[in-house]
Amino acid sequence: MTVRQDQLKNGFRIVSENMPGLQSAAIGIWVTAGGRHERIEQNGIAHFLEHMAFKGTQRRSALQIAEAIEDVGGYINAYTSREVTAYYARVLKDDVALAMDVIGDIVLNPVFDPREIEVERGVILQEIGQAYDTPDDVIFDWLQEQSYHNQPLGRTILGPSERVSAFSREDLSGFVSEHYGPEQMILSAAGAVDHDALMKMAEEIFGHLQPCKGHTPEAARFTGGEARQEKELEQAHFALALESPGYRDDAIYTAQIYSTALGGGMSSRLFQEVRETRGLCYTIFAQTGAYADTGTTTIYAGTSADQVAELATITIDEMKRAAEDMTPEEVARARAQMKAGMLMGLESPSNRAERLARLVQIWGRVPSLEDTVAKIDAVSTKDVRAFAEDVAVAAPAALALYGPISGAPTLMDLQERRAA
Image 1 (cartoon, rainbow, N blue to C red):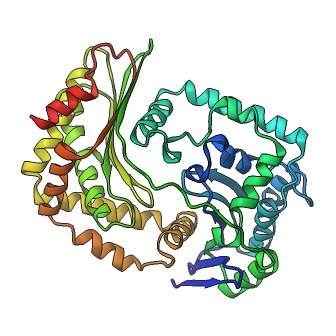
Image 2 (image 1 turned 180 degrees about the vertical axis):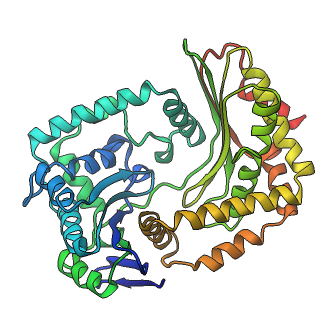
Image 3 (image 1 turned 30 degrees about the vertical axis):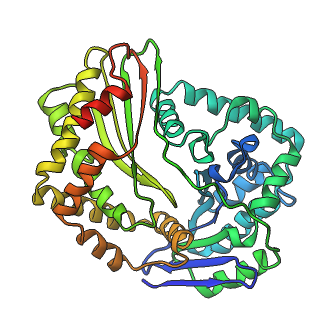
């Protein structure tokens, strides 16, 4: 398998990887225009725009967009994150050109029919309402807001209902004009694809685009803070975030190995101590996520009202203990989990296309898998212990609690426990 990468004269980038033996391909456009690229009055518009891309173009109705891909047995979808919006499809190899045409059409030619805007506005408001009814959605939004308070990176991707209710056709068009230039776009494809053919199609569909001004997002500052809301639920939901490296920092591999060993699987410390030994919860996990210039190590658990204080205390204690006695065997197991998860995921052309796009967005190139594996293997037990000490004691923290939490500790309580 060989990765190929090119760029049109206008800055539009193309990256692909042919995967021999496959009869299908994943293909999509990744646009560097996510939640953190919005101004405060625009919060939620990137996601609204993603929805509207499927509501009709100059050439196709909403139904025709769906039928064009599904008539050939394919699949088309999109998502909005805090740093990108992606439009992608999975089709058989003979239908790659069709997928390119449809994706190009919905990205470049949405009509923003006022009637469809109102229909989709209602859909998104229902989506926001559904999120509020889902505790483990709400708590992570609160945790993000406290981690990056009063910053674009801390705002919800869906946006608040009052802003979504007010977005106009002109607001949508303006966001496209500001952010959907060729230099903000990456065409990524994997599977049964021919790079030269992709280049030709990209030139035909996207080669005429003129660069746009774009918008450099505000640099992230992990502020920390606390959000808590008492509510009559079956469980108390506990989420703790600690500042970690961004994805351009090689320390991200240490952070990910640490969180995997701490709470990344059934053999992890938190799972064994909190769930298996003490029976304090059904779900508990730790994970490390990253953005361009910051990252967070997050711990989440759901437990009963009378056990949330004990769970929080044990979590801090396990974090501190990892700095003292994390073993080479645990680090080796976490490394193996990371590598296996990455390599198994890359057996899917959809996952591989997404990885290619993200790497080009981050680095402007695609580092080899061998380089990535080598960086994972280079993380030592000493590195993980040092990171664990920083996270356990010194890293800025944010806390979110939701449910029957009257007996739950405050962030100040946890900070004192960390410092003890």
